[in-house]
Image 1 (cartoon, rainbow, N blue to C red):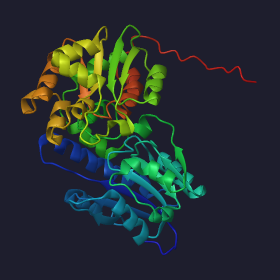
Image 2: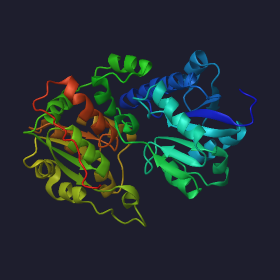
Image 3: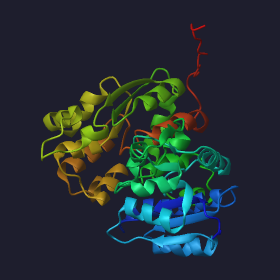
Image 4: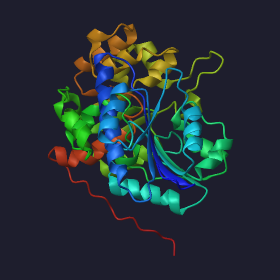
Length: 386
């Protein structure tokens, strides 16, 4: 550790949970990606310190072996992200901080990491996030200013907190690089289709035998102007805009449940168009109503969980994302998953990452993974402003 009073630090926080097969799939991917993040930031100029925050004994052992200079901070079951972050900033005298969640930065390289660090080091009183509204990786300077803040239990509110603390918030241009965050084993299927550039993660993904047939049915549709992709979930305008520019197909979008609107208050039901459709029509009727003349569906099932008032277990959610209805006990989710498999048009189920970072990624790789069925002609934009 350097003796300088002010330090520039990389912090990677990775939690692994559950022992079921789908949970283990994601856990191993998070471990691999964490090590890759430590690798690409290890030799970046101006970085004085790397810190790993984790509950994984396996990850600690691998980090100690491969990166002996990394400082290790262990977490326990009562983990509170904000509390640990403040302790680390204070204990290591961190002034310039770049933070990564273990599932984020999957497509970043050393040059990207260097760019983020440069932004932080060369600009005072700013925060930089991949997504201001739901943060997966984040930089801030001076980090000591956060010591006077009440930091959140989870990392996704770091953008908001930094703004409230008086920082000038900045957001990186949204792309697959900045938006992908692995939060379900289903997300690994799209990452397996094209190399991420992260050595350990790519090696792990190449060893997996996952059913990618549904994704492979949808990929050519992204390059086909005669197709109509239906997307339902917590989709932001930037994601839709990106797809309009980078996919050739028509797109129907049903977006709801973003931000504080998705928070249940005083036991009230969360209003949901999707929830109502599936409640009244059942799994097959709901899918038929959504798809209409569509040729494929990407569905954020977490909206339905919110509407129901209780979420299936993490294990069940992941089994559903992988389309294994036989592993499910929650009746409506089992019915939806089984119906999705048997439906005559391809349907992909998942969470928020599916309808954000994964969509960016699929729109990018479709043109290389499959033979394009149409030309994606992007018109040059002109302005009437003088």
